[in-house]
Image (tube, rainbow, N blue to C red; front, side):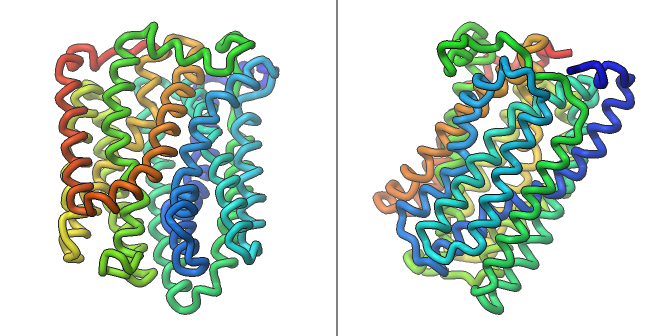
Length: 409
C-alpha cells in the first residue's frame, strides 16, 4: 500500500503534506475555539448547565486523547494508511457537530459535542507519525508552525465573528455549530489527502491495548520528562475550563458578554500565539528542548497566576496574553517533542503514550478544578497552579544536558 508514497521523492512528499496541512490547520482553528469557548458558553448561557455537565464538555477532548492509545493499538495491524486512520475520527467529529447544531436539548447537545471532540482528539498520534515520516528532522518545527499560524488566526477570527453573532442573538448558536461541523468534514478531507505510509505493525502487544505505556518505564529520559510534563500540564489543564467559567458565571462577579469572554479566552491568547509561533518554531529546531520546556513552564505559571489574581479586566487580559505566549511554544513542543525521543518507526507509539497521559490529566483536571475552586477560591487556584509549574520546572534542571537528544529520522 506504500508504493505510491515511495514513488514520490522526499521534497514532493514534504510539499504535498505541507499543502494539505495548511488546509487542516485552517479548519482546526475553527474547531479548536468551538471546543474551548463556544461549547462551554452555550452550555452555560443557553442551557444553564451544571458543574458536572461543564466538566464533561471540558474533558471531552482529553478523553479522546486518552482513547488514542487504544485506537492506535487496534488499527496497528489493520494495514490502513495513517492518513485514513486520522481522517475517519475527523469525519465522525464533523457529523456529530452537525447533529449538535440542531439538538435542541441539553442532553443531546452535550452527547454530540462530547462525541465530536472525543473523536477529533483521538487522531493526534497519526498526524505526528505523518509529520515524522514526511518532514526532515531539521525543519519539522518550521513546517509545523505555518499551519499552526493558520489555526490560531482562524481561531481568533471565528471567535470574534461567532461571539458578535451570539451577542446579537444567542439563538444563532445552531448556525455556529453547523459551521463547526462543516469544518470537521473539511479537516477529514485534508488529512485523508496527505501522503502517508501504512501504520506500523508490531507497535503493540495484541492482547493489551495499554502495553505501549511500557516505553515510559523502559526509556528513562522519556518517562521522566513525561512525569514533569504531567505535573505542569495538570496545573494548566485544571484551570482551562475555569478560565471560561471565571469570566462567564455569575458566581465570580464578572459575568462578561459573549464578546468579552471570547476576547479574554480566545482572541487575546490567539493573537499572542500568532505573533510568537514563528519565534518558538525557530527555537524548537535549534534550542535545547529541556531548556525550552522550562522557559515555557515559567511563562504559563506567570500567566495563570495573574489571570485569577483579580477581577480587573486589564490584569486578566495580561494573564491571558502570557498564557497565549506560552501556548505558542507549547503547541509546537507538545505536537513534536516525541520526534526528538522516539526511535525510528515508533513515533506513533511514543506519541500515543504522551497523548493518552495528556488525556488523563485533561479529563480529571476539569472535574477536580471545578471542585477545588469552590473550596479555595480562584485566587488560590491560580497561585497553586503557578507553584506546581515552578516545581515541574525545577525537576527538569538535572535533565538539561540531555535536551538535545534526537533519535527519530
